Image (spheres, rainbow, N blue to C red):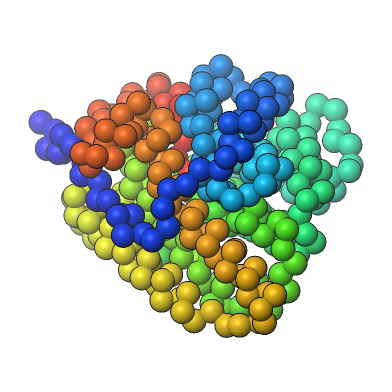
Length: 348
Protein backbone atom coordinates (compact mmCIF):
# COMPACT_ATOMS: atom_id res chain seq x y z
CA UNK A 1 0.00 0.00 0.00
CA UNK A 2 1.22 3.52 -0.85
CA UNK A 3 1.75 5.32 2.48
CA UNK A 4 2.35 8.68 0.85
CA UNK A 5 -0.11 11.53 1.52
CA UNK A 6 -2.83 12.11 -1.06
CA UNK A 7 -2.21 15.87 -1.15
CA UNK A 8 0.75 18.20 -0.71
CA UNK A 9 0.43 21.45 1.23
CA UNK A 10 2.24 24.41 -0.39
CA UNK A 11 3.07 27.14 2.13
CA UNK A 12 2.45 30.70 0.90
CA UNK A 13 6.04 31.87 0.85
CA UNK A 14 5.44 35.35 -0.60
CA UNK A 15 2.54 36.56 1.53
CA UNK A 16 4.70 39.23 3.22
CA UNK A 17 6.91 40.19 0.23
CA UNK A 18 6.63 44.00 -0.16
CA UNK A 19 6.73 44.07 -3.98
CA UNK A 20 3.24 43.60 -5.50
CA UNK A 21 2.29 41.81 -8.71
CA UNK A 22 2.52 44.19 -11.69
CA UNK A 23 2.42 43.59 -15.47
CA UNK A 24 4.21 45.49 -18.20
CA UNK A 25 1.75 47.39 -20.46
CA UNK A 26 3.69 46.33 -23.58
CA UNK A 27 3.23 42.62 -22.88
CA UNK A 28 0.34 41.85 -25.22
CA UNK A 29 1.84 43.80 -28.13
CA UNK A 30 5.14 41.98 -27.80
CA UNK A 31 3.85 38.47 -27.05
CA UNK A 32 2.36 37.61 -30.45
CA UNK A 33 5.39 38.92 -32.34
CA UNK A 34 7.94 37.11 -30.19
CA UNK A 35 6.06 33.80 -30.11
CA UNK A 36 5.68 33.86 -33.90
CA UNK A 37 9.40 34.50 -34.35
CA UNK A 38 10.22 31.65 -32.00
CA UNK A 39 7.99 29.26 -33.96
CA UNK A 40 9.84 30.22 -37.15
CA UNK A 41 12.93 28.42 -35.83
CA UNK A 42 10.95 25.13 -35.94
CA UNK A 43 13.16 24.01 -33.06
CA UNK A 44 10.57 22.05 -31.06
CA UNK A 45 8.64 18.85 -31.52
CA UNK A 46 4.83 19.20 -31.42
CA UNK A 47 4.81 17.91 -27.82
CA UNK A 48 7.51 20.33 -26.72
CA UNK A 49 5.83 23.20 -28.56
CA UNK A 50 2.64 22.45 -26.64
CA UNK A 51 4.61 22.48 -23.37
CA UNK A 52 6.22 25.76 -24.38
CA UNK A 53 2.83 27.35 -25.08
CA UNK A 54 1.51 26.26 -21.69
CA UNK A 55 4.51 27.76 -19.91
CA UNK A 56 3.69 31.25 -21.27
CA UNK A 57 7.13 32.75 -20.79
CA UNK A 58 5.86 36.04 -22.19
CA UNK A 59 3.71 36.33 -19.08
CA UNK A 60 6.77 35.77 -16.90
CA UNK A 61 8.56 38.51 -18.85
CA UNK A 62 5.67 40.94 -18.43
CA UNK A 63 5.53 40.25 -14.70
CA UNK A 64 9.30 40.34 -14.25
CA UNK A 65 9.96 43.63 -16.03
CA UNK A 66 6.83 45.77 -15.43
CA UNK A 67 8.58 49.09 -16.07
CA UNK A 68 10.81 48.10 -18.98
CA UNK A 69 10.46 49.82 -22.39
CA UNK A 70 9.02 47.80 -25.26
CA UNK A 71 12.37 46.79 -26.77
CA UNK A 72 13.62 45.52 -23.42
CA UNK A 73 10.43 43.48 -22.98
CA UNK A 74 10.99 41.91 -26.39
CA UNK A 75 14.57 41.04 -25.50
CA UNK A 76 13.36 39.60 -22.19
CA UNK A 77 10.86 37.38 -24.02
CA UNK A 78 13.55 36.23 -26.44
CA UNK A 79 15.81 35.39 -23.51
CA UNK A 80 13.14 33.36 -21.69
CA UNK A 81 12.36 31.43 -24.88
CA UNK A 82 16.04 30.79 -25.46
CA UNK A 83 16.50 29.45 -21.92
CA UNK A 84 13.58 27.07 -22.46
CA UNK A 85 15.27 25.84 -25.63
CA UNK A 86 18.58 25.28 -23.81
CA UNK A 87 16.74 23.13 -21.30
CA UNK A 88 14.91 21.25 -24.04
CA UNK A 89 18.13 20.52 -25.97
CA UNK A 90 20.21 19.42 -22.98
CA UNK A 91 17.92 17.64 -20.51
CA UNK A 92 18.08 14.15 -21.99
CA UNK A 93 21.42 14.17 -23.81
CA UNK A 94 24.64 12.53 -22.71
CA UNK A 95 27.55 14.53 -21.34
CA UNK A 96 29.38 14.82 -24.67
CA UNK A 97 26.34 16.24 -26.46
CA UNK A 98 25.53 18.65 -23.62
CA UNK A 99 29.13 19.88 -23.58
CA UNK A 100 29.16 20.31 -27.36
CA UNK A 101 25.92 22.30 -27.30
CA UNK A 102 27.11 24.46 -24.42
CA UNK A 103 30.29 25.25 -26.36
CA UNK A 104 28.52 26.29 -29.57
CA UNK A 105 26.05 28.46 -27.65
CA UNK A 106 28.88 30.25 -25.86
CA UNK A 107 30.74 30.67 -29.15
CA UNK A 108 27.62 32.21 -30.73
CA UNK A 109 27.18 34.65 -27.83
CA UNK A 110 30.82 35.70 -27.81
CA UNK A 111 30.92 35.98 -31.62
CA UNK A 112 27.42 37.15 -32.57
CA UNK A 113 28.40 38.34 -36.06
CA UNK A 114 29.99 35.04 -37.02
CA UNK A 115 27.84 32.98 -39.40
CA UNK A 116 27.06 29.60 -37.86
CA UNK A 117 28.15 26.45 -39.73
CA UNK A 118 25.53 24.66 -41.81
CA UNK A 119 24.01 21.70 -40.01
CA UNK A 120 24.88 22.99 -36.53
CA UNK A 121 22.33 22.61 -33.72
CA UNK A 122 19.69 25.37 -33.93
CA UNK A 123 20.57 26.47 -30.38
CA UNK A 124 23.57 28.43 -31.62
CA UNK A 125 21.59 30.45 -34.16
CA UNK A 126 18.86 31.23 -31.61
CA UNK A 127 21.58 32.40 -29.23
CA UNK A 128 23.30 34.47 -31.90
CA UNK A 129 20.15 36.28 -33.08
CA UNK A 130 19.06 36.97 -29.50
CA UNK A 131 22.40 38.53 -28.68
CA UNK A 132 22.70 40.52 -31.94
CA UNK A 133 19.44 42.21 -30.98
CA UNK A 134 20.24 42.61 -27.27
CA UNK A 135 23.63 44.27 -27.70
CA UNK A 136 21.99 47.11 -29.63
CA UNK A 137 20.35 48.19 -26.37
CA UNK A 138 22.58 46.78 -23.61
CA UNK A 139 25.34 48.84 -22.02
CA UNK A 140 28.83 47.38 -22.25
CA UNK A 141 28.96 46.53 -18.52
CA UNK A 142 25.59 44.76 -18.73
CA UNK A 143 26.78 42.77 -21.76
CA UNK A 144 29.84 41.63 -19.86
CA UNK A 145 27.81 40.71 -16.78
CA UNK A 146 25.34 38.72 -18.87
CA UNK A 147 28.08 36.70 -20.57
CA UNK A 148 29.70 35.93 -17.21
CA UNK A 149 26.47 34.73 -15.63
CA UNK A 150 25.31 32.82 -18.70
CA UNK A 151 28.64 30.99 -18.81
CA UNK A 152 28.07 29.88 -15.20
CA UNK A 153 24.50 28.85 -16.00
CA UNK A 154 25.22 26.69 -19.02
CA UNK A 155 28.21 24.97 -17.46
CA UNK A 156 25.98 24.24 -14.47
CA UNK A 157 23.47 22.65 -16.85
CA UNK A 158 26.21 20.34 -18.12
CA UNK A 159 27.10 19.30 -14.55
CA UNK A 160 23.43 18.75 -13.69
CA UNK A 161 23.10 16.41 -16.65
CA UNK A 162 26.16 14.47 -15.51
CA UNK A 163 24.56 14.14 -12.06
CA UNK A 164 21.48 12.69 -13.73
CA UNK A 165 23.56 10.24 -15.78
CA UNK A 166 25.45 9.04 -12.75
CA UNK A 167 22.45 9.06 -10.39
CA UNK A 168 24.37 11.36 -8.06
CA UNK A 169 22.54 12.57 -4.96
CA UNK A 170 23.96 15.80 -3.58
CA UNK A 171 23.81 17.16 -0.04
CA UNK A 172 21.63 20.21 0.57
CA UNK A 173 24.65 22.54 0.49
CA UNK A 174 26.18 20.97 -2.62
CA UNK A 175 22.84 20.96 -4.37
CA UNK A 176 22.25 24.65 -3.69
CA UNK A 177 25.72 25.54 -4.99
CA UNK A 178 24.84 23.94 -8.33
CA UNK A 179 21.19 25.02 -8.39
CA UNK A 180 22.19 28.68 -8.01
CA UNK A 181 23.66 28.32 -11.49
CA UNK A 182 21.11 26.05 -13.17
CA UNK A 183 18.03 28.00 -12.03
CA UNK A 184 19.06 30.64 -14.58
CA UNK A 185 18.12 33.75 -12.61
CA UNK A 186 21.37 35.71 -12.92
CA UNK A 187 21.34 35.95 -16.75
CA UNK A 188 17.76 37.24 -16.58
CA UNK A 189 18.86 40.17 -14.42
CA UNK A 190 20.40 41.60 -17.60
CA UNK A 191 17.11 43.30 -18.48
CA UNK A 192 17.13 45.38 -15.28
CA UNK A 193 20.67 46.59 -16.01
CA UNK A 194 20.50 47.03 -19.80
CA UNK A 195 20.42 50.80 -19.92
CA UNK A 196 22.75 51.35 -16.99
CA UNK A 197 26.49 51.91 -16.96
CA UNK A 198 27.21 50.32 -13.60
CA UNK A 199 30.87 50.61 -12.59
CA UNK A 200 32.30 47.28 -11.47
CA UNK A 201 32.71 48.65 -7.96
CA UNK A 202 28.91 48.87 -7.81
CA UNK A 203 27.94 45.64 -9.53
CA UNK A 204 30.49 43.54 -7.63
CA UNK A 205 30.03 45.26 -4.29
CA UNK A 206 29.46 42.48 -1.70
CA UNK A 207 26.15 43.99 -0.55
CA UNK A 208 24.81 44.18 -4.13
CA UNK A 209 25.96 40.66 -5.02
CA UNK A 210 24.42 39.25 -1.85
CA UNK A 211 21.10 40.90 -2.65
CA UNK A 212 21.16 39.28 -6.11
CA UNK A 213 22.07 35.97 -4.46
CA UNK A 214 19.01 36.29 -2.22
CA UNK A 215 16.72 36.66 -5.23
CA UNK A 216 18.32 33.60 -6.80
CA UNK A 217 17.77 31.66 -3.59
CA UNK A 218 14.11 32.69 -3.31
CA UNK A 219 13.54 31.55 -6.89
CA UNK A 220 15.16 28.19 -6.24
CA UNK A 221 13.00 27.54 -3.20
CA UNK A 222 9.75 28.55 -4.87
CA UNK A 223 10.52 26.69 -8.10
CA UNK A 224 11.50 23.50 -6.32
CA UNK A 225 8.51 23.57 -4.02
CA UNK A 226 6.09 24.03 -6.91
CA UNK A 227 7.78 21.64 -9.35
CA UNK A 228 8.28 18.83 -6.82
CA UNK A 229 4.97 17.10 -7.53
CA UNK A 230 5.56 16.82 -11.28
CA UNK A 231 9.16 15.77 -10.78
CA UNK A 232 8.46 13.08 -8.20
CA UNK A 233 5.81 11.61 -10.51
CA UNK A 234 8.32 11.43 -13.38
CA UNK A 235 11.23 10.22 -11.24
CA UNK A 236 13.15 13.45 -11.88
CA UNK A 237 13.18 14.75 -8.33
CA UNK A 238 16.92 14.11 -7.80
CA UNK A 239 17.51 17.77 -8.77
CA UNK A 240 14.94 19.23 -6.40
CA UNK A 241 15.43 20.83 -3.00
CA UNK A 242 12.36 19.19 -1.41
CA UNK A 243 13.49 15.69 -2.29
CA UNK A 244 17.05 16.38 -1.13
CA UNK A 245 15.81 17.77 2.21
CA UNK A 246 13.62 14.67 2.64
CA UNK A 247 16.58 12.38 2.02
CA UNK A 248 19.19 14.23 4.07
CA UNK A 249 17.03 15.13 7.07
CA UNK A 250 14.74 12.08 6.94
CA UNK A 251 11.67 14.31 6.56
CA UNK A 252 8.31 13.55 5.03
CA UNK A 253 6.94 15.83 2.29
CA UNK A 254 5.11 18.14 4.70
CA UNK A 255 8.14 18.63 6.93
CA UNK A 256 10.39 19.28 3.91
CA UNK A 257 7.96 21.91 2.60
CA UNK A 258 7.88 23.55 6.03
CA UNK A 259 11.71 23.52 6.14
CA UNK A 260 11.84 25.19 2.70
CA UNK A 261 9.27 27.81 3.73
CA UNK A 262 11.29 28.65 6.85
CA UNK A 263 14.46 28.94 4.78
CA UNK A 264 12.57 31.19 2.32
CA UNK A 265 11.55 33.50 5.19
CA UNK A 266 15.18 33.70 6.36
CA UNK A 267 16.36 34.68 2.88
CA UNK A 268 13.62 37.30 2.58
CA UNK A 269 14.80 38.84 5.84
CA UNK A 270 18.39 38.77 4.60
CA UNK A 271 17.32 40.70 1.50
CA UNK A 272 15.30 43.32 3.38
CA UNK A 273 18.09 43.80 5.92
CA UNK A 274 20.62 44.02 3.09
CA UNK A 275 18.80 46.93 1.48
CA UNK A 276 19.62 49.02 4.54
CA UNK A 277 23.33 48.31 4.05
CA UNK A 278 23.61 49.48 0.42
CA UNK A 279 26.44 52.06 0.15
CA UNK A 280 26.09 55.41 -1.58
CA UNK A 281 28.00 56.17 -4.78
CA UNK A 282 26.52 59.63 -5.27
CA UNK A 283 23.04 60.76 -6.36
CA UNK A 284 23.36 59.88 -10.07
CA UNK A 285 24.47 56.29 -9.37
CA UNK A 286 22.27 55.77 -6.32
CA UNK A 287 19.08 56.32 -8.31
CA UNK A 288 20.17 53.61 -10.76
CA UNK A 289 21.07 51.24 -7.94
CA UNK A 290 17.62 51.71 -6.40
CA UNK A 291 15.94 51.05 -9.76
CA UNK A 292 18.04 47.92 -10.26
CA UNK A 293 17.35 46.57 -6.76
CA UNK A 294 13.63 47.26 -7.07
CA UNK A 295 13.77 45.35 -10.33
CA UNK A 296 15.46 42.26 -8.99
CA UNK A 297 13.19 42.27 -5.93
CA UNK A 298 10.23 42.24 -8.31
CA UNK A 299 11.69 39.15 -10.01
CA UNK A 300 10.92 37.08 -6.92
CA UNK A 301 7.28 38.21 -6.98
CA UNK A 302 7.01 37.70 -10.73
CA UNK A 303 8.36 34.16 -10.60
CA UNK A 304 5.98 33.25 -7.79
CA UNK A 305 2.90 34.73 -9.51
CA UNK A 306 3.74 33.24 -12.91
CA UNK A 307 4.18 29.79 -11.40
CA UNK A 308 0.48 29.78 -10.49
CA UNK A 309 -0.85 31.76 -13.44
CA UNK A 310 0.83 29.74 -16.21
CA UNK A 311 0.29 26.02 -16.74
CA UNK A 312 3.94 25.12 -16.11
CA UNK A 313 3.44 23.35 -12.79
CA UNK A 314 -0.28 23.00 -12.13
CA UNK A 315 -1.94 22.71 -15.55
CA UNK A 316 -5.18 24.73 -15.44
CA UNK A 317 -5.52 24.51 -11.64
CA UNK A 318 -2.85 27.05 -10.65
CA UNK A 319 -5.08 29.86 -9.41
CA UNK A 320 -7.24 27.39 -7.48
CA UNK A 321 -4.16 25.85 -5.86
CA UNK A 322 -2.86 29.32 -5.03
CA UNK A 323 -6.02 29.78 -2.93
CA UNK A 324 -6.34 26.32 -1.36
CA UNK A 325 -2.57 25.64 -1.04
CA UNK A 326 -3.41 21.94 -1.67
CA UNK A 327 -1.92 19.93 -4.54
CA UNK A 328 -3.15 16.38 -5.28
CA UNK A 329 -0.12 14.07 -5.24
CA UNK A 330 0.44 12.68 -8.72
CA UNK A 331 1.02 8.96 -9.26
CA UNK A 332 4.37 7.77 -10.54
CA UNK A 333 4.70 7.70 -14.32
CA UNK A 334 6.04 4.56 -16.01
CA UNK A 335 9.59 4.72 -17.35
CA UNK A 336 8.31 4.53 -20.94
CA UNK A 337 6.46 7.84 -20.51
CA UNK A 338 8.96 9.69 -18.32
CA UNK A 339 10.74 11.59 -21.11
CA UNK A 340 7.53 12.93 -22.56
CA UNK A 341 6.16 13.77 -19.11
CA UNK A 342 9.20 15.75 -18.02
CA UNK A 343 9.44 17.44 -21.42
CA UNK A 344 5.85 18.58 -21.04
CA UNK A 345 6.53 20.05 -17.60
CA UNK A 346 10.12 21.33 -17.37
CA UNK A 347 11.31 22.16 -13.88
CA UNK A 348 13.93 24.87 -13.96
